[in-house]
Length: 386
Image 1 (cartoon, rainbow, N blue to C red):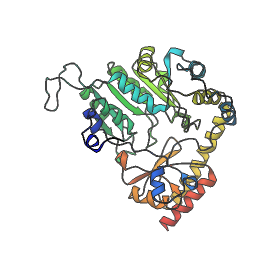
Image 2 (cartoon, rainbow, N blue to C red):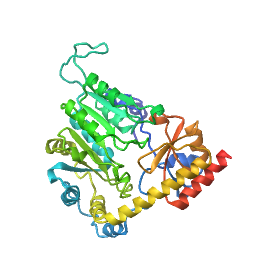
Image 3 (spheres, rainbow, N blue to C red):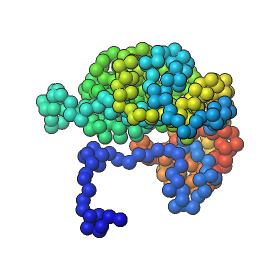
Image 4 (cartoon, one colour):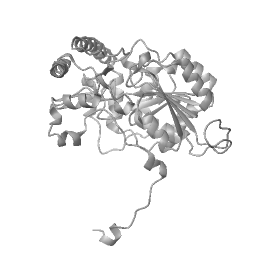
């Protein structure tokens, strides 16, 4: 036990950026919250997460049984990366694997952002002519980890917010002007976007990348598989575009955490240099390889999910709500007070995503699940709207 006098002494302080970085807000179950509400987690239907509700394929479950737990995993993820390279038609040195997409965007921030960049002209603020921090532009409203990772590295962050008046569609001209003014080192965008479900025109993204060759455009494509009509930024072949992919979402590996990044070899090598050793565990690697072999299962379940979303949104409209158009299986709904709506549903064993952390307190985000589960949501919502 630490003596009382020693325990009262102040501890060393972390970097200022740590103290200035706010807490994370995400979907999924908050077990502490449920315990305080005396709600059994096993009885909660979770519409706040955007993963494939049909779960991993039987082949994935079988592959996990043969993984030796007493052996270190391959820290280079060679077998998994080879399978991904063959699947995507890219080279091995264009892929780095990670513990989910979230880790990869943190690695990107660690590899490319500097808290005090070399002196450069600044046209705004009080620092004209002085040393500047690296700048990050985030195209929002979107995933909060882009901001957190950037702030922790000491970057200056500017976030563009698409308007609900335009259906949250990004404004090409406004974004182009922002990029020209800020001259960022990193640009974060999500395609299709979380939480709005809106997509970007890849020709326009390519224009931005060509106009700003010194900026790395980090394109989060975690939900691309749920929107089969959309193309990937990988096809642009731009040296300053890094595509992030999540196998957590489409292949339903949330409990294992698995993602990968695809980019030019020099960018991928930078991420590999800052990643922790053995960052992808053996179970996740085996699951990823098995999942890639099960494309028929993936396409069947995603097709069923798309049909389930159509029935769910029709049901919500029948209850007087107005789900916004979305390219994917999740969508926004204006309910007036998202926090209160979420709380009322949680008491009924249903969880949706309160969107206040996205700057959208009137909205909730709902991700479609299997039809019988969607019917439970509609029944619960009917008790609130009746």
